[in-house]
Length: 322
Image (cartoon, rainbow, N blue to C red; front, side, top):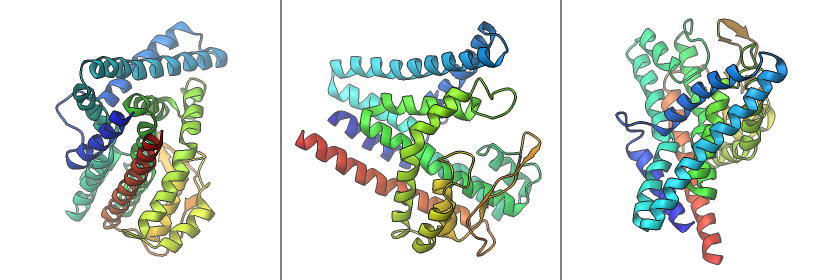
């Protein structure tokens, strides 16, 4: 367990310094391909009825979790048996691939650079790569808002939550979390195609993120004292708007971000060509601007660093006393 703690720390540092390597196979992308292929396989094995699709979704979820967790677990057991250094090296690389701190910053800052260059079409294309909504008709403010919302929400999903799972159970538990989270992002939609098939994955994702979402919000509030943002407003808006979302978890870090930056986030948006009515988060104290994207990233980075330090100290203390 001590080796895993070292590996998480190394993986986090690699993620901050380098981000995801572009020319190497990425484990999370491989999980995505696995989900797509198994979806086709299980749809072919079950009838296209409510019960059939629900059963297919359960089999899909269990299969993806088992494969995504078992493979890295077996690899690490074998490598740690050979040498602790081999195990730490491999697990560090796995932890590196699980975290998305640097990539979240890089992708959102690409949107920022296009906006600063008055390249609205380029910014629209860049933001479409990191959000699920339709971006075709977004103006500059809409693009900036979408980028800030993504940074806020993924501070929990892409950074803090996987960090928590890895601190508890190393890279294998991190892959367990990412498998469920990736399934939710791919099949967890409440539309005709995925309502039944994606229900089990979406429910498990809500369960797994219940504590991390709230812990992430608390860490982000703490980060406002050391980084950008209005701490009092972050607390006020969080208490008021943290449930202003269909998901029980998604609005927590968004509410903190909205309060800290004194912005109004969320609201109505187009998904798959249809307008979806959504509650707003935060107050429109001022209009959003492109500069809010780097501000959001500063708060996200501060949140991740504070969380990493606190969790490492807690886990290290437990291992020392144990």
